[in-house]
Image (cartoon, rainbow, N blue to C red; front, side):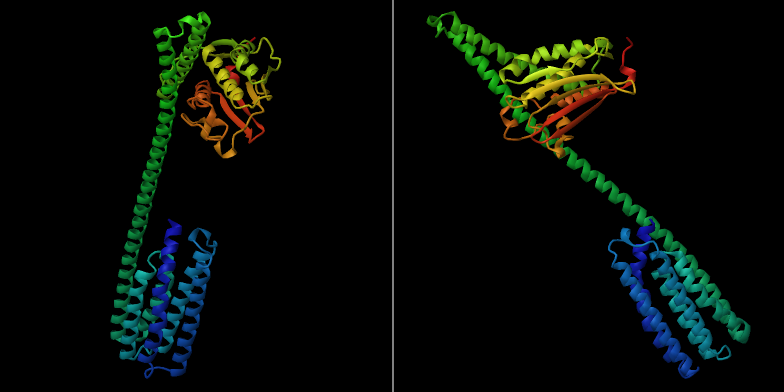
Length: 440
């Protein structure tokens, strides 16, 4: 609010400063023959000097750029400029106006009323600026005329007091309206920003799911075509003369395709349950070493086929977590599967688990694989995300593995972290809180 009012105040300075430069010589000319001409000349010159100084101040403040970058003294300097200008106008009018001269008093009163009217518009954004300008401008002259101007002067002074009071009321109303306008504008801008952000999120989600469906349709079509093709061969009996071994190979291909298809469907069902909040996991103390051994056994053949070193650090046999056994195994299998999949031949994958100082348990999977760009570490944890690189595009999958790990970890109050160096490997870490550590 303060910054918005300050910006509008500086924008309105043009009106204030131009009016000072225009009205001062006109007022001087109007009373030229009714007052001391030397005093009038120097007063106009001094008013011009102060006004030009205020112009320079406004230009300097604008030079700092947007209002957020304006120095702290900006508001005080602008209000002080209005006060000095009001004092100078008030002193000048008092000095050059003879309270006994009805014509001079009338001219001065007319110009004071006009200047105060202009200030109501130009200075209403900051009330102290308006009061600082109007009070020293009106009060000295009105008091002088009231005390030394006779009956006519008294009537004129009362009229000025009433007029100035009315202008103050109008200025306060303007100030409130301006504040309400700024609040409404900022509210609208905030709502618009939220709408745009929501639209962008929806479009991003739509693109991600479209990409996912495109990949899944390719995955499913490939697997189903293989299953149907090999089943058709078996049904037709075309290779019956080649003996049992040929049919055994076909059956193996069908089995592998069906197993992969089942894995895809399982991933989809798991992430759907987790995102809907309908997943129900029975919890019990689980030996971490046993869960790691189970996950390693699942990945042994894939690691051997790629000539990978798949190892686990010694884990205390009594180190246990109070979680769901299937969920813990799935997290470990997903992490190991990713590590094996994206580690080139000859690399290494290592699993470790340990008790932390705060009583929680840390489980990590480290690989020497292709790594993940630092700006993509958050993205790979989102459902249906797959990074497109020359290496990853040759590997099938749903892109749900890490998302399932992250979701399951959150279900158990654990923190899932990824640390990676592109081309140097990745470390995936699960930090389970001490509340999940099962007693010996």
